[in-house]
Image (cartoon, helix red, strand yellow):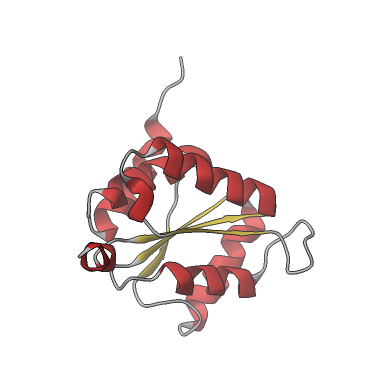
Length: 139
């Protein structure tokens, strides 16, 4: 029965120049999002050789691993990560259908995306929640 629910969840990919940062943000987002255990979240950080940078292959593999048919929200940390995802989207066949590059702060947006996805919300709501994280005030 849980598999049916999982099929409706939006997948989240976190693209960072650092494998450790991507993995840590994924763990943080899932840990802070009560009930998010079923949300498919995958880090795509660094290069295939373990260095700093971004990898189209790692992003594509991460997106495929979280795709449950409800869309994939991709959040990025810095400029070339954005360019990597935009290039993959432009190619048209490298990422699952209904994959979106989400304009959101990396950490706060990831938490908001995972929390929202855990409710079974669709890709539009996940994207909006992550983008809304820009308005979070700390003072």
